[in-house]
Image 1: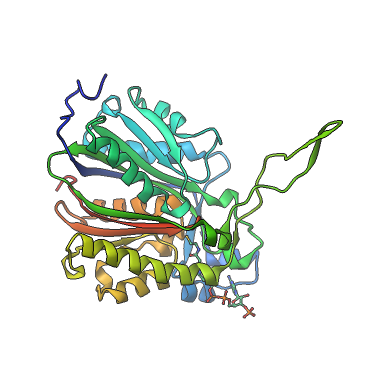
Image 2: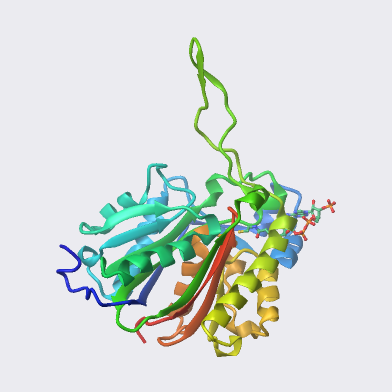
Length: 341
Ligand code: COA
């Protein structure tokens, strides 16, 4: 059905975030298990990252399964029929199909009236997708959107590289958003700097194959994740506070007014450093790094959903969020949670 006919007010200029969901990869992998494969230890990983276990998908668990499960649970919280969705936006760097996995998720959900597409911005993907979806709602061209962040970096991690394999895991999270008169998305800032992108990559293979007598081609495929950890760390602790500061100033909101700091979950030391810059007490910093590690586009909706379901994040709470990662890409959003009380 045309969303405008379905009731979206062409005059709605706001966005309400009203449902969340998440889904977990099947297997739990402990630091000690990784220590049996590479030269590392539980003590090293916990003290440098805050991670003690991560979840890894089983070979039969597709990205679309995780994404659809997370989406279904966000729809249930919002109380929406899948058919009422106008948009399914899937943030991922690890689609099942490079042509796009969002349509498979749309089909699995039965969201037959929704357009569905992927958006790739690595660990900033969820935040970028939330803002992108919000634009459709603000113009009045759509009424309801499901924004999903899902990744299976386990498929691209070099499990023999101790410098990176300890950091990552798989997962999915989703948020249901709706056009509203009162705006729950108070502001956002998005940033990219491709000139610094070489510090974190999941690059295409450099192949050079014979195609025909006088022609060659590059065969598709990817190398495992390559990362300069120290440079990524420096990038995060410089740019995340800067973009958050800029956003808070623009919105005329003081850090003391925030109920929660909702950062991309990459490293507990990054979370702590950003919180300290704003004198935000630790209990207001959402973290589930210990159990999931870095699930890329999934981290923000995954930790949000946990906190909504256990009653920490409540309707009316104000959250400052920041995503950051490969690209380089980063950004921030300030929003009020308006889910069920
Ligand atoms: N176990 C044990 N030792 C390890 C190790 C591991 N898993 N990984 C690296 N080391 C070793 C290094 O080889 C190095 O040894 P050396 O001094 O003998 O050469 C030593 O530990 C210190 O390495 P360094 O890279 O300086 O560690 P660090 O304190 O910078 O921590 C990271 C490494 C990866 C935890 C940290 O840089 C980080 O979190 N960076 C951000 C990464 C990130 O978040 N990426 C995703 C962004 S979206």
